[in-house]
Length: 441
Image 1 (cartoon, rainbow, N blue to C red):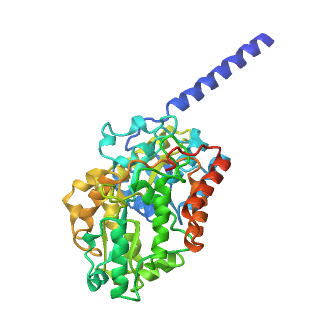
Image 2 (cartoon, rainbow, N blue to C red):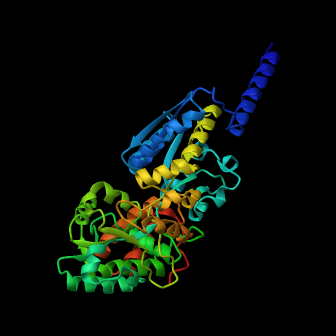
Image 3 (tube, helix red, strand yellow):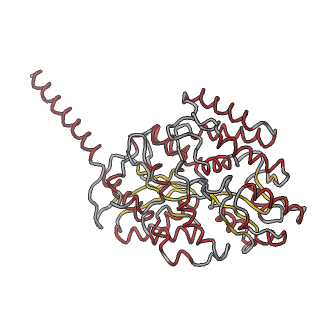
């Protein structure tokens, strides 16, 4: 009797073991128009709104699949909720929007929850996705945990009317040195207007990273070592400090203050992610026709005339249900790998697609009602020029936090950028255990 029970137990354990292995391997299945299930989608702000708008087109093919979209107020709120959910293995979403810098932090900490999309993407997907997004779609094991969604090239937003009054031709601003000289010219012509505006207290340290990327490195080098204290980092920090020292910068105090300054003649430019254009349209509609966008200046000619300031993708969560997972995959493909729906994302919400076939459509180049002719034509050129050296790490979030403190010291205390970045890199090394990059100088 005991032997019989042992034999039965072994068989049961074997069946459970096999079923677990099968479940892990068979993450996907076939679905049809008759498939019934409900999937949960998490995203933030206008990203959530866009996904909500794609539900009708998805339901044309799968009418019995219900899609619930939960909108979060921003990436930090969603990230906090996601960590709680993954940590407790409860109330899991089926699809989640993730900011590019957070991808490694989240997917490496909870790898079992992130499905491999590599064999589920179209065969030519790497040819129809913006190049800078490809490398950042994979985890350290080679698993594709991200479906590229939106890009965020950096541009120089500028007040065309103020430039005209000061006799400044935006095309003459090629280098950051040109930018500073133009700022002095603007100051002479319009004493109450500063060339550039940004918050001195918090929120603009990403400018340092943007200029680092133009020079060919990120906070981390290609080997994952800390590259904050490097020639690119020092040059970028010195440049930002010069804006204040040269008297061409205006302290907007915070996000709200930057919006307020955009509505007045306090500032003439804002180097920012192109998504700022959506904020201007929404928060400063009365400035229509005054704000324009141009290439980002460079430290040396030949460097990329743009950079990276944001960006996001989406992941499909392993909930152990192949039907839900496949339904989610099809929903994501419909929303993100679709010319029609990505065109809607751009025209209605100002979201820039990582899906490049959109840029082949004549409709894409219709004159932008806010920025006018030339704005939409600029975007594909920016997409092609985006630096390919972005390097995210599980310590990217901590690096960003430390760089905010460094930024405040550089801007408010006029501290030596080289010393501050050296101290910051050493602190990150102590906290993370990572090595310092060899590209110091």
